[in-house]
Image (cartoon, rainbow, N blue to C red; front, side, top):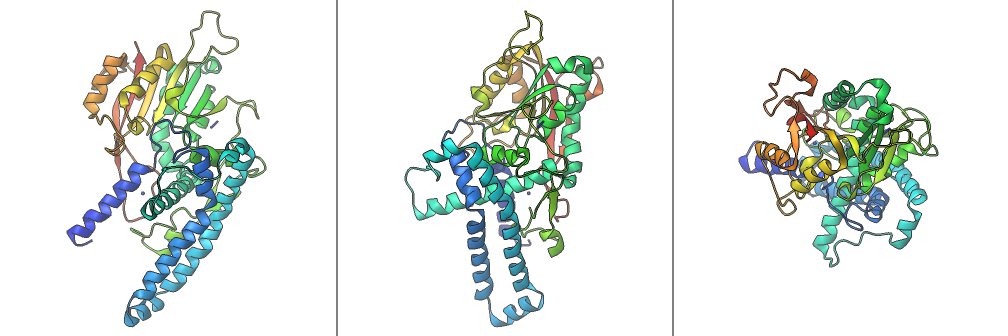
Length: 411
């Protein structure tokens, strides 16, 4: 189942947005005790309240530092009360992050007994600690936004734009009667709503996610001790980002989740499995029980959503997708090419180069690279889909991706 007036200010604002967009997804790399490990994410969730209150203290100090006349205007428009309200919302959000920590202690007790704090990097300084704190807050708050995107009524419009092309392709390829014997892999699954929706089509689905931030947040929804009814929880996901806000009510609004209760195949008669770890380290699975004796290993389909540009080396990712698919298997992709920062990415390809690399690895694009092959159903053809990612639909700014959709077959 399973994001002024003077040019310098404008440039700084845009760069800030880009940094948020580049870091909100997990780089597709192996890291056993790095910034996305169980230990690091547990420490980050545990510190959400204290780090957020420290940030609020700095905001209060900034307000206190302005002149008396300006401070009086700030008081008249309610700025101190706004800061007080933020303190309340930090406590409200912390109910969720504390719940995630409790779930982690139950599910990862062995891993957490090794180390309760992140070990990265080996040499620390004040600047390093500040950077780690910023990373912890960014990742934790991003997880709260993912609850909204993946598991709330407020996320329906965003989900429909990016999920529907993938679901339509998978619905077209296989008849319902045969889907229970077909495996689908969803790497970079995040909070696994796409994987869950694919499983609802009748497929046997494996959600694969490297980041313990995402896996532990998903387990918070899976655990009946923490999530037992629809819309049980509430978060205030936009309370920490005060730019581009029309009014305080929008900024501080609460959103309830989950809109439905997800469960894994081990708990219910459903075809959703969770594999925590690095996609690049996966092996092709054996055929499902009940398959023909000569059924080859591998997945029938791989569905990637906002995933391939997290690759440090995109060629490794393409080769792994190809390797994990059965002969003639199908890869369905939708996403942009927002490559990891240049310090991480070894290759930063154009879209045209990605298609060249796909052909070199052994893929054929359904409907042709231009999407003009009339023999393919329209929902299978390559096309550009404008979309957003964990956006605030009430904000004054929108970041639109020209994401690319394609269906490719292993040849």
